[in-house]
Length: 373
Image (cartoon, rainbow, N blue to C red; front, side):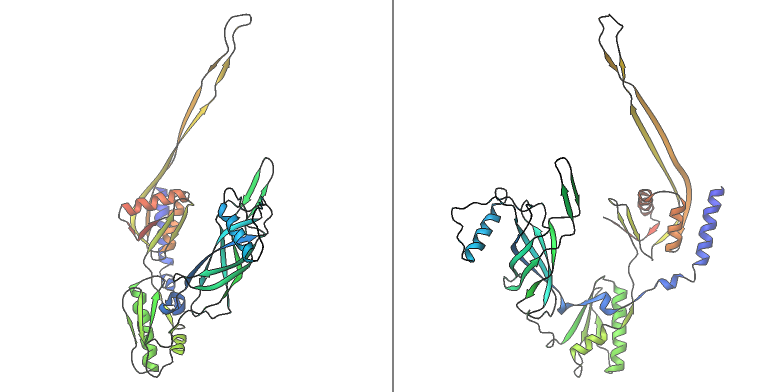
């Protein structure tokens, strides 16, 4: 009974102390931080290239014949004949090169690229990416990449042991690609702006439209924004407005954001993320674990001296069962801090809290969406 009163009193005290704190959880953000311009999206680029200069950690030509073919083709383009010659040096690796072309990128600007091994290379550390063309979905070449690859992982190997940390078969080339072609952009010719929310929500979309209309009434004399759905807000361009300046003014407007209540659980890592709007109806929770330990201690039985007996093994098994926990606690979560405090007071580890949250959701007491990863 003392445990019940202690939990209930703790919940009551926290609930009383947090009545004035809850409204502070309503966050405000700039429109540029919660929405993106539909006409200003990224475009993905891809290419195939070679990394050279590896210290014996590249592709084996038998296991990765395409690497040898690519190397011969590259040397022939440079005017070097390789017919009749064979190389066993593992200092070359075939890689896929990927990058994101930012919106409104102009020729001559640089972007980062990512290189990933295609063959049986064990490490790309210390290698240099040879000139590689990057194409878009339309097959046109938009950038050319070249430079030293930066690999964060490392590998140390001896005759009897190997130590590997991180990923050694993928890396980045910072600023390694130069944009050669400009994307066709008609931003100035657009008649409206379409904002796409990164986290779709009807409440946030309506608030964006209201804030923009308040700005437009003061600046242009009438509303210009309309929320189409939970993700899109369409803003019509006033006749006397410059589209670039209009977007610069709108993206800095501050909006009060809203998100649905969610609890995200990753059972592999034991990670639990609870949103600030999660609520739990009063529910009683009991958590207990049963541990069974089986120990094998076989005994060797020797025969008598000068006897014709044989040595035998007599099995011996010890089984111990231990049950822990079993306390019952009443959890009532009117706010996030009270919910977390109530879960911590039960005295269970994250895997136990995951099981409790799943049980609370099954009981219908968790007023939030439960996302399992």
